[in-house]
Length: 210
Image 1 (cartoon, rainbow, N blue to C red):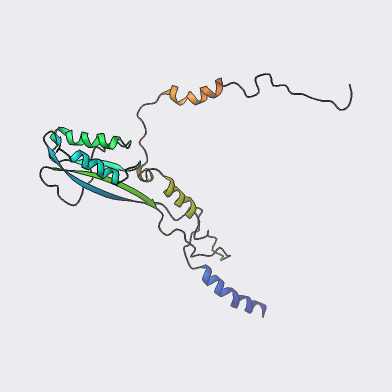
Image 2 (image 1 turned 90 degrees about the horizontal axis):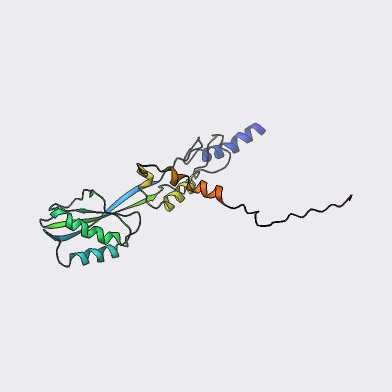
């Protein structure tokens, strides 16, 4: 009779435990997903660069965009014009500590003759499906982690990364290596005066004997 009752009451629990996201490993099934949005602003150009008043328009637009680290700015100038327009936009973007990208992304609308397009590419990272409480943490005889396992770590990573594109391709690093620069921290540590120096006296007392 006990075996029959156990089977009757445990069957619904097993059915509920099998619902939801199943993860039988120790790696999270969730990963940050990076999306990019391109904002465009067309300006009039001349053979010598931006047309009169256009530089102020670009500066006002970038201020409205609240340009910040992680944004990528580029200029699509079919007329080229010796790169003068690109240089003017680069000077404005430099106020925010941002360098102009060498290549502009492809945008859907064609550029009118005599115009150049300033593009601000902004990326964002998020973790779809998190939090996930679809699977309970009760014993379900599946040897799996909970459905929400790893969500906090991945969501914090997506929220804290300064440039979400680093999650996709990382940073290339530098082509040169300077041993003096890499060993500067170690050299400073070795030459530092010990914290116990300076006449520190350690007093010992004896409770028994002379």
